[in-house]
Image (cartoon, helix red, strand yellow):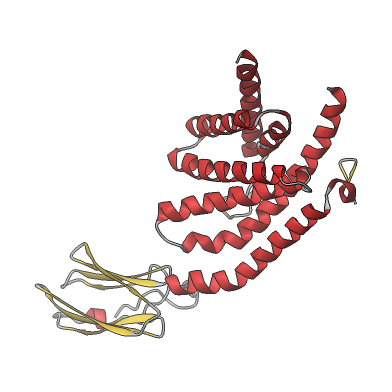
Length: 135
Length: 162
């Protein structure tokens, strides 16, 4: 192959070739493992209570988070990479009507208890589904 | 000293011009950090014609000046991380026998991107940017190879003129 009037075969040494091939192969191997390791394990649920950070929880461990503040009681369930409000003793109970959230920036808000639950580094929002459910 | 000042100033100016020209060419793949790295042409050539401490000086000057003129502080941190790592790796590979300018340039492009990514991980405080790693390594290898081929051609001509 000739480029810029030089012979690439002559210009590149054997070690250059080995370097190029090994670098590209390293990238290919990485893309297999890395994507799975980095993206899929970084999805987390951020809980804000009264404007302050309450806690961050991985979306990949099924668990129940009970939040008891002066304003009231909430129970959030993380199950199958999504989260929903299972119990809340707020007067309206709107937060319990949200669909389970799983994509980045989807959130559940419990206004009476000043509680915001939001997904970070999650999957993408599927276009066909609405973000929130309004009753 | 006067010779060093003159050469370093000239090389820095050249690197800045290349950097500026590159910013005028719309060459984007939608992934931050993927770029041609034209100014690496100057750094690579300087590495073969001048002492290595001159090259380091030129590179740091170019990054600082370009960041102050056209960029911002975070751009400077990313560039310095990438620049220093690529400088060290290029120097190392140049010392090892058997690598031509093209090989040195490839490792320079790849390590520049890795350095930037490491800075991003430290700044963001999350390992999420690492998911760009494979793309950035491949793009670094390709752009590095292109720059290496051009440098090889230039060096052959310049050497004849000297």
